[in-house]
Image 1 (spheres, rainbow, N blue to C red):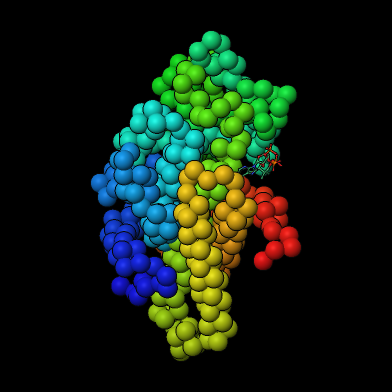
Image 2 (cartoon, helix red, strand yellow):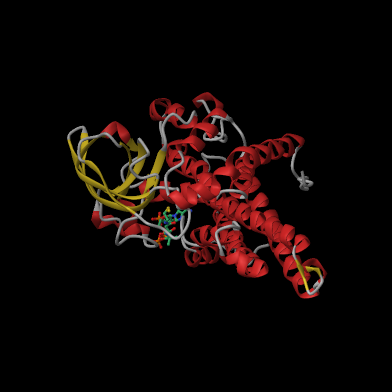
Length: 392
Ligand code: COS
């Protein structure tokens, strides 16, 4: 196995990386192409991750999770994404669905919902995006109207990862449209509640084994005890969630990039043209050197972001540093993934463009990392808004 040592990682984190690398190589990699071609959600991979405790790796031990830090979580996602982006997304999406409950849930809500998610018995989902509220998440039209001790929820959500598969979801809805972002509230909703319906299942360019669905809510009665935080706190809960989960997408992107570089490098040494190995051509050496440099710079930014966010903890109030680093890591890692996978396809030439080699899949998978959990245009906006002016 290649040297997996990285500056700043603890022995435990190094060991964890090696363990996940082995699992990814032995059990996930052989499934990656099949998952992409069939487009079917890989329940066998869910089972595998459940067995290895990867679905709740960074959730608190008291709720059945592995209690690992965010950096360790990122390493898990990175190593799985190196061989299969769809499989890595299963871990990241589970983390995303649980995060609003971890951040804003009361003890009863945490006890009721987190253990099944952390142990991987139930998948979870984060339902924020709507047909007309994508980047403008504050434009949420789904309504939740209070009626006694419950809310009546009506509206629709789109592009929901694990939509229709996740038994537990956090749905964002407006309880007071006159208040804009301050009128949005968050609710824990279960898939089998009357009035919850699964709409379109999207056909996608990449991450094909991941189910992306439209969810419809038709007069769904949600108990008031399932509201997370106070009325009107939903938007901030969503933003604080994304601050803590965008590094997971960055890790997915980083893993895809590393996977593509590893394939390209092997090809460079194996392939002969003009009577010599491709590795002898300086033009290609320069390409690979740039790929490696971009990946390592992205990795260092992501690992630093993970440490900063970990230190801030779940309970902390909005911190400009947390928000900025989270967005910077997501921006840089996903842009790196797109560049590196595109270059990997180029390096493999005709072979890069056909399905026998995994780099065209990696290139298709990389694209979504520049889009979901906030487009990279939104990340730039978030970074600028959270810069310290006049400080260091
Ligand atoms: N943590 C805590 N609070 C935050 C926050 C954060 N990271 N970011 C914003 N807020 C707060 C603001 O402080 C503000 O609070 P007050 O009402 O008390 O002033 C409130 O939230 C509204 O913030 P803002 O005015 O910045 O909201 P905007 O409507 O301008 O939206 C963006 C901000 C664009 C950053 C937000 O809508 C966004 O992140 N969009 C992308 C959504 C996304 O990632 N979608 C993907 C879904 S998951 S696949």
